[in-house]
Image (cartoon, rainbow, N blue to C red; front, side, top):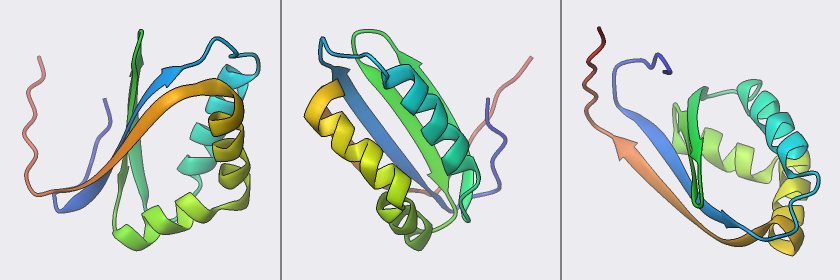
Length: 104
């Protein structure tokens, strides 16, 4: 699990359903995670996939999210996603006001 700073910070929640055309998807997804990690303001990421994929990335501020959205390689991946890999997706951006943790 991602260690995050004390709130507030932002969460980008990406919920997706893949199409039947997924060739190259996993490689691109891994590349985007590595690229996101190098972006200013990136705090962490959690992801799970079954029939529906959910990826939550955490960011220090809205400006960092906008810069990530507009990053050139990410823009190219977004276009491939819309044209080829995704049947549908939703993106939610939320300000995290509180965080609780339990670990054994």
